[in-house]
Amino acid sequence: MKKDLLTLADIDLNDLENLFDLTRKMKAERGKSNYRPLSGKSIGMIFAKSSTRTRVSFEVGISELGGNALYLDESRMQVGRGETVADTANVLSRYLHGIVIRTFSHQGVEELAKVATIPVINALTDEYHPCQILADMFTILEYSGKVKGTKLVFTGDCQSNIANSLILGAKLTGMELVFAAPEEFKPRADVIGNASNISWESDPVKAAKDADYLYTDVFVSMGFEEERKMRLEKLMPYQLSMAMVKAAKPSVKILHCLPAHRDEEIAAEVMDSEYSIVFDEAENRLHVQKALLAMLFDR
Ligand code: CP
Ligand code: NVA
Image (tube, rainbow, N blue to C red; front, side, top):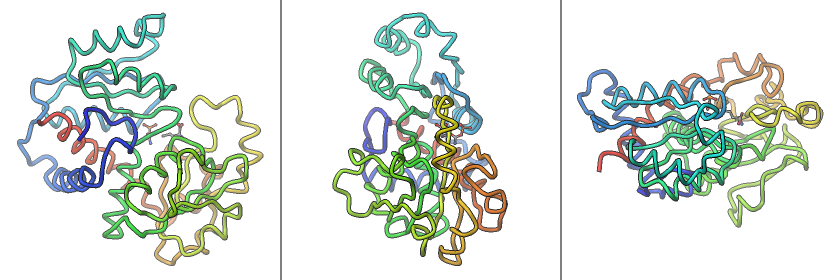
C-alpha cells in the first residue's frame, strides 16, 4: 500500500481485499481485541469543513487502536494566516505520525502529502471522499457478497466528491455504475476515462431499472452554498424517489453518505423505508477506517 490515501486511485485490488478482510475482523472483534497498532502514535486531524461521521469515527477509531488523535481546526492554524502548506507539512511531520485532512482544495492536500514524510488520509476535499466510498463498497460486500457486477445507480449531483470517488471505486472493482443527472451535472469524463462499466442517463426512473443499490448525496455540497438556488432548480427532478425504488430490483437497498436532507435529494419515505441501509453504511466508516489506519501504520 502507498504512503497516502488521497483518492481510490492510490489503492489496488489486492490492497482492497486486504482492507476488507481486516475490516471484517475489526468489526467482529470490536471491544474484544488487544490489537493496538497506533500505540505511541499521534494522528493530527485537520478540519476546514463541518463533520459528524468522519470526525467521530476517526477519533474513536484512532483511540481504539491505541493512538492519540488531535483535532485541528484549520481556520485556527497558521496555514489559515498565510503559512505555506509545505512549511506546515514539514513541521507536522516532525511531531505527528499521520495526518487526516478535510478541506476544500484537493490540490492543497496533494501538496501536503508530497512534502509530508508521514501518511496523509483524505477525509474529503471538494473533489474526492475516498473513505466514504470504501465504507460504501464494504457495505455492498456485506449485503451482496460481492461488489463486482452489482448495479449501483447514483442520482443527483454527479460531479460531487462522492460521485467522483464512486467512479474510481467502480473502476477498481468492476461495479456497474449508472449516473442519473441533468446535462449540467453529468459525471466528469476526465474521471471516468475509458471505463466501460460506467454510464450516464438523463431519466432517473429509467436509470434505476434493475438497480441493486440506489445512492444519492446532498444537492448542495459544503463550499457550494452560493449555488443553492440553481442546484435545487436543476436537481429536484433527480430526487431519490419511490418511483426510482419501484423501478429497481425488489431487493434494492438505499445508500446515502449522510448528512441527508429529507425531501430534497431523497424523499423522506425512501430515507426512512425498509430499503434504507444508511446507518449500517455510516457505522462501517468506523470499521473500514480502523482497518485503513492499521494498514498504513502497522508496518
Ligand atoms: N459522510 C460524511 O463524511 O459525513 P460527515 O460530513 O458528517 O463527516
Ligand atoms: N458532497 C458532500 C458530502 C458530505 C459528506 C459535501 O461535500 O458536502
